[in-house]
Length: 181
Figure (cartoon, rainbow, N blue to C red):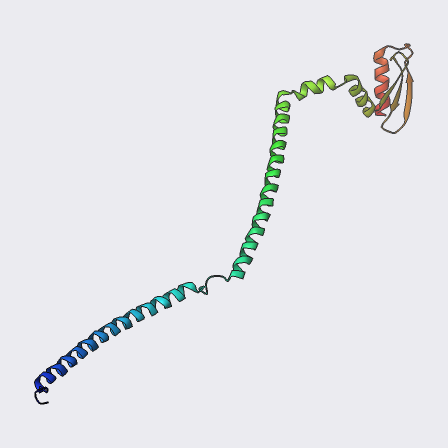
């Protein structure tokens, strides 16, 4: 058995086995360290993904977001209505402006003095002035003055009949004397 037993060879086998185990252990340790560092990087990535997937406190919740969208839609509808009302008012004002411009043009082209002169009846105006002074003529069926009622300053009323017995200037003097009395 001694021949089968070679301590040097056994020693070398054990030594080689220990060397392989040390190398295997070093390789495993290296692999384990790499796996551990890879695990740490994945953990950091997981934390970053978790943080990014959660809603920040500054952002609204889905319910708040839905309420905000609803409020904005209501505001949009009310603003649309206000715009529509404003456009209607604008159209009305533009039509009114066009009418006023047309009326201004007509008024600028017209001559009020001439129109007033054409519409004015001188006889009616003179009669109104005479009545204001105190003379009120009475005419016959043909439009001739036959009598004159005179209201004096004292409030008395006199009636003068034009019968042609006196000249016109004497009748005029008599009428003015009665008015001022």
